[in-house]
Image 1 (cartoon, helix red, strand yellow):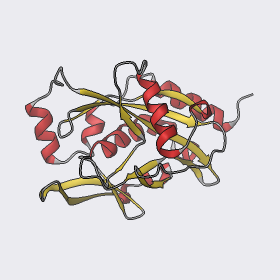
Image 2 (cartoon, rainbow, N blue to C red):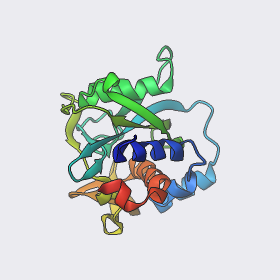
Image 3 (cartoon, rainbow, N blue to C red):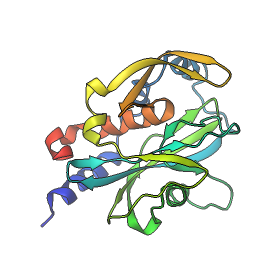
Length: 222
């Protein structure tokens, strides 16, 4: 007989098999600037670089959590200092895309690939500023593994509960300053204990939360 946890994970796996909420759900956490960019260029460029990220679920006493990282400051990284999922670039020879998500999670947060079960995949998302087409995977940590930030690459690790991310009060709007002082007005973000989670990460989270919403809050978080 399935436990409550196994039953919930099976439902998540089924939800991720589709149909997914897709771009409509992603855009709920996109800035007006981002929406304009997507409408102006709806087709992903053929030469876009590929990246893969992992939305890693794990159970704690108060319910289900995910894992986010705070990237270390790096003048060569367009996403320097931002909060994101573990992940990185796919290159020739890497094989299946999911392998990249697992490899990067192992490097950035210290979780061995064999401890993760992949549940499915969300809708890919193009990021114009970095020219990456991001493939988000969803996995679950099947055993207790301590997280360790990668020295020089990861400033810290956040483990927000899904209950916090799903609460409307934690979806806010602010002005974001990036690059050489560019201000992106009225940008939606998730407030994770004072950390601003915006951009592609917020858009991916938005689709994930909408995909699993029909499972019910009680099943998700208790």
